[in-house]
Image 1 (cartoon, rainbow, N blue to C red):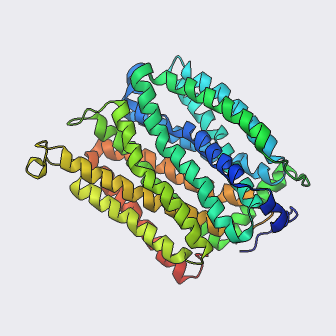
Image 2 (cartoon, helix red, strand yellow; image 1 turned 180 degrees about the horizontal axis):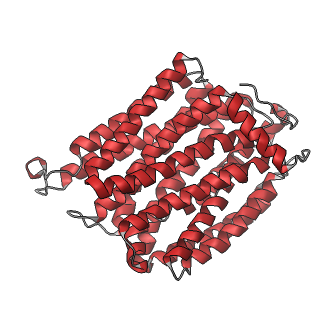
Image 3 (tube, one colour; image 1 turned 90 degrees about the vertical axis):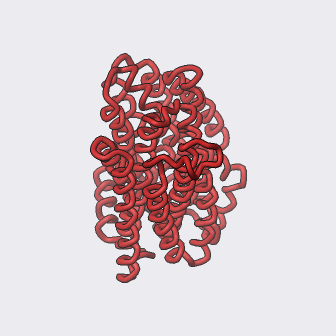
Amino acid sequence: MSVPSPTPPAPTVGAAGQNLSAGLTALFAVTCGVVVANIYYVQPLLADIAASFQVGMGSAGMLVTVTQVGYALGLLLVVPLGDTHDRKRLILSLLALCVALLLAAAASPTFLTFAAASLGLGVLSCAAQVAVPFAASLAPDHSRGRTVGTVMSGLILGILLARTIAGAIAHYAGWRAVYVTAAVAMVVLGLLLARALPADPARPRIPYSRLMASVLHLARTDAVLRWRSLMGALGFAGFSVLWTGLTFVLSDAPYHFDQATIGLFGLAGLAGALAASRAGRLADGGHAHRATGLFAAACLGAWLLMALLAPVVPWTSLSPLGSGLVGPLVALTAGILLLDVGVQGLQITNQSIIYAGNHGARGRVTTVYLTTYFVGGACGSAVASLAWDHGGWLAVSGTGGAIALALLGCWLLAHARRQDG
């Protein structure tokens, strides 16, 4: 892929590689996980937040969309600055502002003020995606995919464990305590990063208008980036359909699970973190196309499993424990695991490909890819809320299956045009 960029090339591979130790790679991974968790704490808390502010579940469900829209705005408007500004200083500034908004969310007196704080948190949490290309720029070429996979494994764990942690804290201390705890975690993380992150090499400044114009030019001229962005958006749309719809189905009859129990379902997706690491190695080995097809097929298989076997009818005759809920929950858990493997493996494969070149424009590549990605996620959350209101779980799983089919179609079409990287 060729990218027109007014920035100079990145530092040489040898120099970059020497700056990225195993410990620093781990810190990048932790950073991504802790920061991106701010976006996902709300998902298992929707029922409690709706009750606290006396709004309907449909309105509460839109908080997920609002936060993801904010994240997309941060990716679009802030992340490109990483190509021309000191990334260490940028990350630390975003974290400091995150602390303020987490505390504002915890103290929100009305639903609208909480929604506004959620939007701002989404914007500022783009700090995670300043960190990913920062780590990629420090890694040598031969292991860049593995480095991205490791760092993104931390981000994936943050996405998954955010639900579990938020559910547990809210169960014992209320949903507002979740945001206070998150603010403390961000302060600790900021102190660690201030000490450990290397100095970012100085680069010529570019006027902001020219920087944003180059983002648009990149999106228009790089076909591989466009296809990979579209596939990523479809994958994450399906992921968001699941996790928005799952909160509704598990808090409703016949389950009536509390936040802590709903949050535990996030643990079923830990296999996605393992898939992320493996996907980076496959991309480094030249198997990105085959891996993409396998991960897309896993997404479709997951939705078929959840649509056919999830909690639609009682399964008393199939339950060894005598409960009609065990069979559907086993199927649901298996589907969550498979979908996470597919979505997270696809994500790492995509990012490994788009970071393979573009040495002077990785921030802008991240902007194009992940803005598209999280717009897809926001659309998935919104569609999930509508599907649940109109047809319950069957409509939710049907929506997810249709998205997975579209993903497979994009993979085949991009390969036929030789534009899949």
